Length: 112
Length: 118
Image (cartoon, rainbow over all chains, first blue to last red; front, side, top):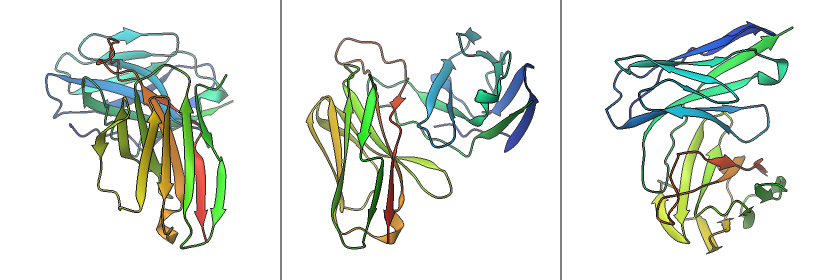
């Protein structure tokens, strides 16, 4: 699986958009980009995933560059509850058994 | 209703003991996983089962033995506990494609079981 690189930490003001970058320059054509987050002492939570096109759901938007070598997760209006570790993962879709490999992630601190 | 539930949440035990952690999911998924998060906070997959069959088995000591009595349950038994086994163990589930569903890659995680070996 392709390796991802994320900044170790970021700060964001409450109510502003949080833009979390991820580099995955060795991504291959059939690898998806996933984002998960882990709020302190809780299990990881799925946020969003995409292949080529930009994606949006009720939690966030995922912007993938045209060459697919990087992506950005956007939390449009960050709240204090969005403070968490955010993981960017690339993975080939399998019929079953998703072996997601979690890196160090980005610690996002949302401040009032 | 909790989608993926693990018991116990906390477990403190002595070196050399044998312990089990249980996991149940009520999402109707056919694939379940065990992940380990150590003190450095890295999450690593240990095992994955699909419809009670082992499909992923990472380099994990033989002292760790998963058991899946049915596709809604995946238990983790650990023999001869060592200090290095202290960690938070997360169970997860997802819907695979074999059962006719679409594998979106979305894993649902439990709240974790914190194991402390003294």
